[in-house]
Length: 390
Image (cartoon, rainbow, N blue to C red; front, top):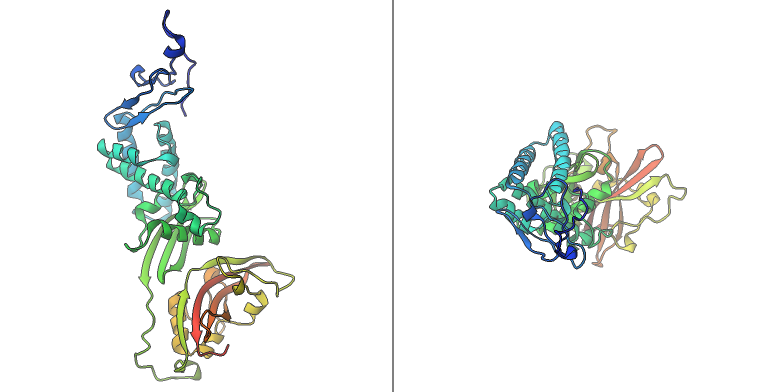
């Protein structure tokens, strides 16, 4: 940041209290120094600043046109890297972002406090790449303190800064989502799911939001801090066409779904790490569902008694296939393989009373020993089922 010299007294015979001025060490021209007695805006072709205070007035330096052009070139090189997602490009992008933030601060632009004026001024100076990047920082600052973020992230506050959010400004430049979705609400959901995963390094995560496949990419924001870089919304997973002719059964497990059995997905948002800890002494202890009702609580013993493959016999092939497709699961290849979900953990299920009296709520769970002595349990999805006696 800037280093300041001591106040310099005014000329002899002048009022020293009103003529004192604060000089910047790297030689800001005298016309850019704001004096105590007359706070006024500094007008340059590209920026406007107004510095005033009831006590001490400080000198505010606007980036020169040469500085803006330099920053524009840096921003352009980072935008080009966004088109690549290989390991080398991610590492290079991380380093560039770190030094770019320092360069912004040195030029007088605080990354946590970028506003629409900065964006408009950069664009007026013909620095489109810089304006694009500054706009992403502006959106991140807006998101950091938004009500939408607090909706799905209970620990967030209205006083949070952009640098405290585990999201890169890149997210606003390269993420995809449906046009009718609310951008900040969608990002808030993504951040909540991402944070629950507890990433410890770069990588990808696949989840479901609003019945759409979603890919989440994780990387480093400044070479040190892991953040969510982007989310890409994939295909919508439609329900199976139950009116299509059924294939001829080849074994009892391929029998069609009974006529009185109905099933529908009601919530496919993953709730990560409902349980993450040492193997419990009491497997019957209740475990609460994240962002769930108290009545949805379960025990590890209850889940362990209900392997996922049992659902095929209970629901029938069509309903079971619907769950497999909605969740994006893969059928086991060999006789000794099993159905797996998040974190490659074996799938299970349990049921609870539903809001509709004639239905049951089916809750899919992945649970297992993630590391020696460490049990992890994820909530994979919720379905409403009619006509099955669990």
